[in-house]
Image (cartoon, rainbow, N blue to C red; front, side, top):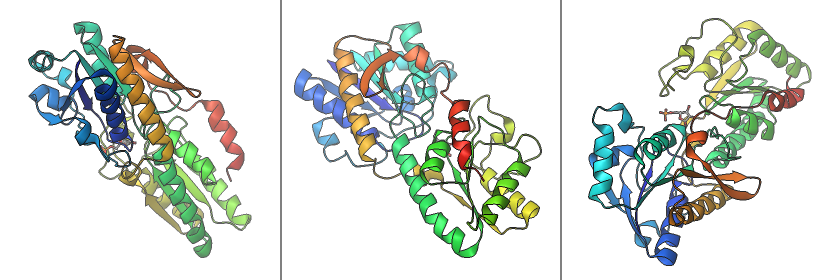
Length: 345
Ligand code: F6P
C-alpha cells in the first residue's frame, strides 16, 4: 500500500519511535511505501514531503522531536484547504494516511474521514495526556519524568534557603502533568486548571509547611488560575480556542510566587520548566507505548479500519473512534485531585 504519514501539533518525545515502528512493520511485513508530510497538516496543504523509509527511521528510537517536523496548521480553517488536502493525497495516489497528533490534529483527521471519506488512522500523542479513551498519550511519561526530577532538585535548595519554590509545569487545559509530577515529587501543593485555587488557602499551606520545618514546593500548571482576581501575566504560550482569556498567556507561576511573598513575607522563587518537558529523549515507557501504537496503527491500515485511533486501555492496545476521542478533552477527575489533597500543607 502507499501510506502517507504526518506528525502535527506540539512536538513531544516518542514521535520518532511511532514513525519507526510504522515504517519497520509496514515495509518488512506488508511491503508498504511511505510518504512523510513535512510539518503536520501544513505539508499536506502545500504538498511538501520528506523521505520516509527504513533508512530515514534508523537510529531514531531514542531521539526527541520528529524527523517530519510539526506545526499547528489547520487546513480546514483555509477557504480552499480541504480541496488542497484532498488534491495532495490524490496526487501521491495514497491508499491511507496515518495522523499522529493531539486533539486538534486528530480532530481535523476525524472531519476529513467523516465528511470526505479520507482513509486514515490516528495515533494519540501529547505531553498533556488530555486525549479521551486512552489511559496515556505518547510523550506524557517523559514530561512527568522531567518535571519530577526538577522537583526533586528544587527540594534541597528550597530547604537550604528556607524559601518557597514555585514550579510551573505545562499541561494546557489539563492538570495531568502537575498532578503526576507533584505527587511523584512530594509537592506540598498542586494547582491545576480544573480546580481554580484560593491564594489565601495556598498561603496557609505554605505557612503550615514552614511550621513543620520544611520549605514548601508548590507545583502549578501553566493554565491554572485563582478563583478570582487579576493575574498579571507575561507573553507566552499559544492559546487554546475557547480557553479562559486570563489563561492566554503563561507566567502564572511567577505571579503566584510574587503573591505568596507579598502575603506571607516568605522569600519565593519560581522555576518555569517550559519546553524542557517536551524536548530530549523519550522515557522507556514512552518508547514502549509509541512503538506499540505504531505497530497497531499500520495493522489498522491494512485492516481498513478507517477513522480508528490506537489507544492504551490498561495494558492492552485497543482501537477507539477518532471522532469520539477528539470531540472533548480528558481532564483531571475531581476525586483524583481530592486524593492528592492529603499532602497539601
Ligand atoms: O500542548 C502541549 C503544550 O506543551 C502545553 O503543555 C503548553 O501549554 C503548550 O503546548 C505550549 O505551547 P507553545 O509550544 O506554543 O508555547
